[in-house]
Image 1: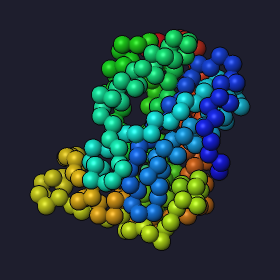
Image 2: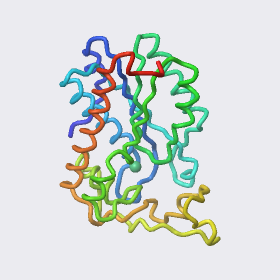
Image 3: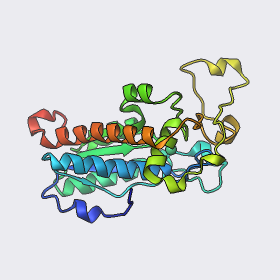
Image 4: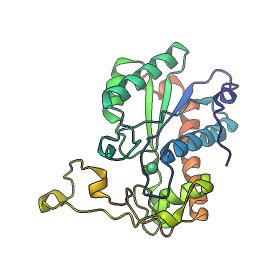
Length: 251
Ligand SMILES: [Zn+2]
């Protein structure tokens, strides 16, 4: 799949009312995927979904991807970049404000990074600005498909993400370098209790810098997952774009 920064082509859509904001992260992905894997996924999925929705009557545009996310746990990796929550809040608010000035009152965050937690930010900003902000957490959108398609999907550079990257950018995937993606449990047993959480340095808890074994990943699974995911997102874009004011109670 060809990757190019061509937001200008999306602007050919007349008077858009929905903007998609892809949001990724810059971090190590086990030993076999590019640092920018989340950036690539959020951007390509957003663009593909928007194009599909626009072909059915939506009026959407795709903004350039935000390449950095919350990676406070990953600062033990060279070139991992951490964006503070206050910085993410400022970016999201400034983007929302700018779009509102142009008459665009519907914004979809297309998030590909599990460490990004946008809900508190969306609650705060939506209470201040007359913009409807939708959070699309890609890794949570189609759990049934994930269950059918993958043996052990993993949550970071595992079977699922590796399959998708094989489909999107196979030349940049070197599966021969991949580790098993095991997770080291806490020594303090009580901290392994479900529902209990605290951040840990990624390298100590995930020695391969991945979570989940990618050994059963393949392009075919990646293609199916990508198509199902973009289809689901395109429905969100279309429904949001054709909704009238009365259907949008918060604006
Ligand atoms: Zn990733």
